[in-house]
Length: 296
Image (tube, rainbow, N blue to C red; front, top):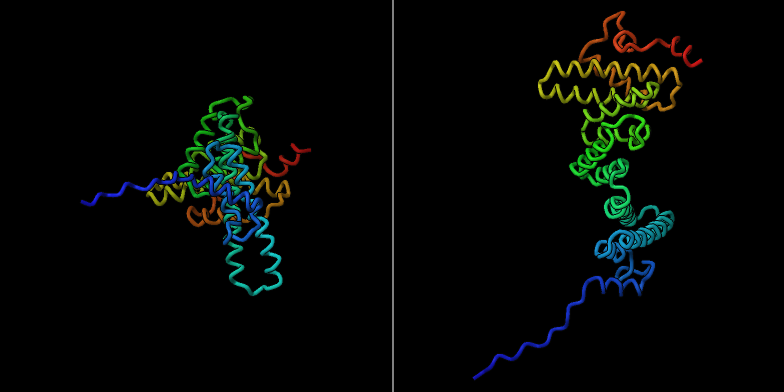
């Protein structure tokens, strides 16, 4: 009678992290060839497998980023000598993409594992996280972070120290527009205008937001709402260009885009009635001469 032989003793499985750490001991800076365990990948894997997270993950990501930068620089120097090497160009593109994602991962760790513990009620933290999520095309997560940022200060008076500074809120309005939260962007911009009505960028962003809202309302057959949004957009954009000229504003692309938006509105609504210019009668803003007198 044959008996089943007893199972052979099994060696305990080693955690992948142990093998990665051995590879690091052999190739501390990631300079060796990947075929023998070199390169940056082990550092990036250790960052993701870190049980501690936080600073430990960041340190491994930074080692990986340093190794990637070194490889990019080495390839760029050889590429200059052999400009027709398509394979090198492809490798360089992949390495740059991987470096960008690594740096985003560092930012993400700071936002999630580190900053939340230090300043969970700091609006700029959530705003920065939203920026990272947008770069990752994670728009729902970005919207959630932006809503959290807004909730922390939108009902507070302007003098409250929890309200982000003016430039931060201008940046916030841009992020809101990127994730198609135009209504929230307009609310932020209206508050900014109330604090400083001389900002060319704020008037431009408000006009742009209202123009996009009008486009969406047109697509949804909300004709009256669409017309109202575009009329308001024209007011904001005209005031933008009014200040643009008055201040000799240097951003030519902003001025060009503002004029393009106004031209598009003109095609939809027709030009403003003669004698009732949007930047004067409809918006209630003073003319150039009055503005110059105020500045003097």
